[in-house]
Image 1 (tube, chains in turn brown, yellow):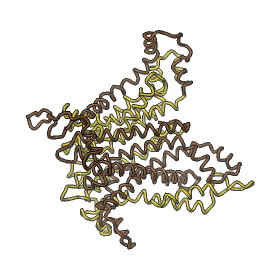
Image 2: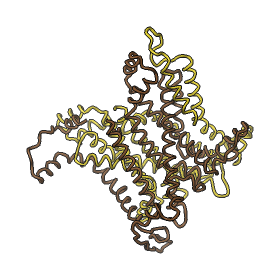
Image 3: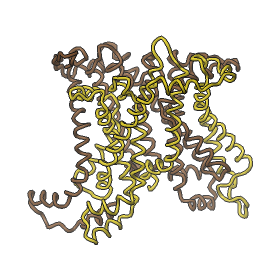
Image 4: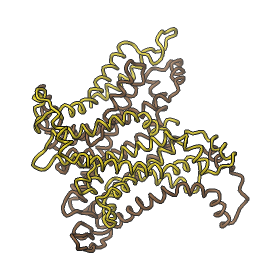
Length: 334
Length: 303
């Protein structure tokens, strides 16, 4: 990488004059890099205006007691100015260790972690299993591949409605279970089964992406490695363990990170599956949406505070993940 | 869920069969009949699981009554396309279609145009602040809807952009722009650096190299970024349902929910609408999925 870059900019590392002054260094830096800065400028501006500014503003809101009753708003022709006031870190304190903090935050937090871990594990193992199957010389594998990516091809909000038909009490799944004389759980009403259903639907939606990414990874593994391993008398398990898995490493580390981020923030599935009817099946994202937009009065400050906490969790996770990858001599692909 | 174990073990045993005795007839990657049968079995089962909810939705959409989903056997005798005609003629379907297209295409256009140069810059140049910039791009991927939703709502309502196409497009750009930049970096990385070099030798500056040499070669990468933006914007629910207030400006994701009110759920119409949305979307997706995966994992598979 480095070599190529130096070639691309047409300079070598040793070109610089010895110990230039600060101003000179800045100017040289500018001359050398202004192309790069000009090229990233549009994205920097967009991110600054559309992401950083709202983020800063959102963070400020978390330090206030803003809700829909005291925020600036316009009713008809009357404009009412904001009357919320600055209350420091009270929102965070209230969320993390205030009264009923467990019911409001920690129970959702635990469920969110469980949800993420289970979903990503299922996505990955099922995706890897199917990718391995599809990577064999098998008749009709193009057909299988086409069918198996279907859950990804249909927009999530459509499939979730399909699942609601199936999971409804008296829907096809329960009718089927009934004919087998199995218990028919209330998928959309009972907390445990709500969670079960949410994981099931999310797994169904998420496997195709994993499968295709890992299939791409499998196909890029040099087959000479397998031949060499066979020559050395490696068993199938050993080949899987020492050739396949290491060969998949960079793809895996990327898709697992993406999977974790996407699942942690998975809004559509839970929101559309249960609406606001399932307080215990809400993960933090949907819960904070509920606080900010699903109830009256809307609690903007707490909702934003949840958002900041969620972001913090993800940033901490990603930092550790990256550090862990670097220690194992891997680079994150994205 | 329990299929997980089965699949992985079967997959490993698929490799198990020709355990390397000299003079074996089977080549690597070809497996014994038992393993092949098991593979087909699992793949067929998985395909059925993948297909069923969609097929079921299509089937239910043909039943004329809103409670037909509870006794699906009855649909068989009285299948009809009435639901479809009703949806197309008596609902705001075409308004939703317009909104969805405007918002999605707007997001796609802005996302791709803006992020192309950035992808090129981070692929080819190492400038001070490079690592921090990449980190920022990654972090923006992690934003839960909740982080930006409240401040965005306030800002957009100050700017009178609530319930406008532009407002929603701007909001979607926050997710698509950084990710498109990532995707395109991955793609630009696969284009040989010698091409840039040749351009420089011929006296082009980096902008010229980018515009004249690299951009034409990067068309598939641009397409991937476009598809990604398209899919993200098409499937987004949270922002769309909060920021679009008038029912003629709903996107499909929001419009579909309007069939369920507190007292009544017109599930037959909902199913028909869902099918009308899903079929073109899935068809479009089929054409692009192969490129999409290559693009998503371009950096990864290169190792």
